[in-house]
Image: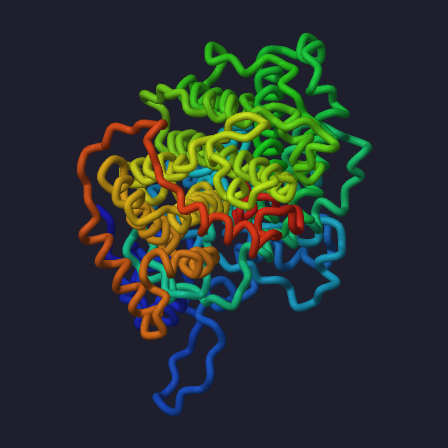
Length: 617
């Protein structure tokens, strides 16, 4: 039986972290709150008598900077200037790895990340010395666990055990491996929007994150800066390998989720060029590898294939990769179900032909490249996919991407039709013939059904209604942009339909206005906050939703949105007929084509009908 003397006496005051956050502390050392959030628990604050309150900095900064034992960065042992601080922080950095290798709950992993603060040394020259400062094991392990929980199903290209092992000992990592780890942290933090947008966000644990961190500190971008700094110290051409490919890929993901197109495309192209350097596009390359390395390399190649095809389609870029090697084998996979889901996503993007990208990258100009078979592609994309047992995060990716690509084919088909019609408009001898050209056919062949966005939009809303919010949020800014693209396509259709046609759609399929409300609702709560695309889609939908009167304020819109969510119909799916007779308001449609010519043309690399550029990972 323990003697009373061996029991630690509770402190007389709350710990520094709990005191600043103004929450209850059990005054142990460490206290329960700091243990749960993996914070450094200290009692360094000296109580003073009550008096005037002085101005405080953000609540976030002091959480990890009470003293010089901050776990965000750890000093390299080879740096003489940091010997003392390394000794002082030794106890905190040498945390048993098993503590972090457990599966974090959604509450714990998200909360711990949202309280991590990336504090740079005030002496900026310290960051320029090789290996002077590195992200601590606490930061690396927290992000590694969140990556494995939410992003690994989307990017199955890392070794779980190796990732956790390397995260626990950052000072022992090679410069290349450290750059890889830092880029993975940056991509994870930014894609999941763990910083929020400055508004009050609620963690899965129910804690208001505004009380645990400030909104002025750019944690994700600070991690990205550190990753770029670490990468800049390497000679990329001297040692090209899978690790260097993935480092560039994660930098692409980080910049893509910040909507920085030029940076993102640069790093994606860099990773693809490295893959070509290693010969990953040739099947013969894999014959010299053992099975494990070959399967890992195949997954990396096909991840690049998927990402390039999605991003290039949005940005009107040509593609470099072809489906020239075998796919990963379910038989050899550590997780067969995850691999099966990954293969389904590959199959979707294999339906997109190379001449589609040739046409798009030339500005959708048929004078320089042949028209792509958009109708055939859409038909292949409409095939049902069996996803029994597939992870929810993967199901969301596969199903929504499948519908979104159909909407893209509709937009390209409509664009080709619009250009052909505009080119031949003035060649008609009769003015009456100009406005009676059937929307369903042209001399170039049939275009897709005009109401196709309504069909795919309904399918997407069915998916959104059946999955968790976390499964949607895991896909980052790309999911927001897909929903925006679908919403704009639905708005384009709705504003061109006669009232009778809209009513017929409402009775047979779904009311387009209901779909628009659904898309707006999804964008209003994406990744814990309102998407930056929400106001634009709302503006495009005002006249359709009857919100174009001056008296309608944003509060009125929010009230209407809540009313729609509370009263949304949850009935069974209607039978869908792709050949349904829809009346098109030709005059309205022609007015749109004449008055907004650039709306349907290529502008700044975006060729679609007002669609946003999207990132798909």
